[in-house]
Image (cartoon, rainbow, N blue to C red; front, side, top):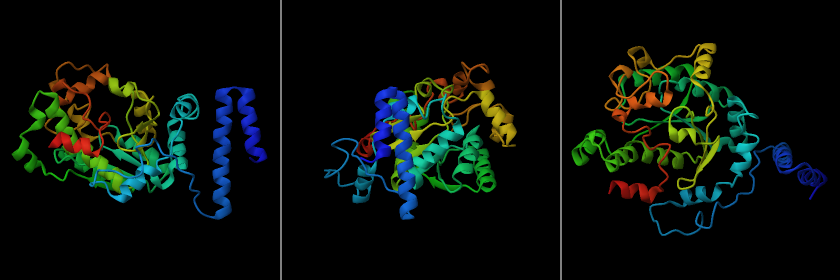
Length: 328
């Protein structure tokens, strides 16, 4: 152990767990930067298995060797420590959170977008820090035409490196085989629709892009589930971290950022929409039951006839084999 590392460890013992941990994290980052400068290449840290089932042989023949290697490559991070210190609301702004993610994951970092009501905020923020970051967009085949126009506008304006993914099952084929899943009241149909049109394409995108972490624009005020999230979480089944820079932002924060940078809302805002999803399951505020302009969470009642607040992209924890079983 060199003198720098020994000093940081002594400080951890003397100064307490939180302060010491911050010093250790800082020294590790300095060591990585020193290694990068010395070799002239990006430093590749030693990778740690997440658990005993993450790597090695598998009975699932549908998983390629590249996908298994990706699972093995996912480094184990102390998320409790990160959320309490360097990624806490007190310590890191949204922009600093994006910068940390880029430094930590490099080319293994991607971001997602729905081209929804406020999507311009995170797209603008992230591409200022990482102009070439891959931007994953899941096209369900049922989006509003205005969403496609909005996506074209932002892609050109922000020069996005857009990666569009869709279900392997076309909308017409799904309806022929399974019916209009979104129009049923049972949980199984809602989950099957979400998995087929959104979750499976997203899981495939993350695998094909070799992503270890994904930046997402969810905010805690939007739904009960999102209110319980942290700045960094782990999707252990699908083998990637998720970073939420805007988690603590209010609606006022969003509006101020859009105004400051002259960024647009989704065009359907002018027609009374407050949340944007698929055209068959999203309604304007005035046509939706149990909604209130005073509550962002209540605004989500304009989705799925007020019966659901999430589509599965942020709640589904199943692995590939389990996702396939949902659709069998």
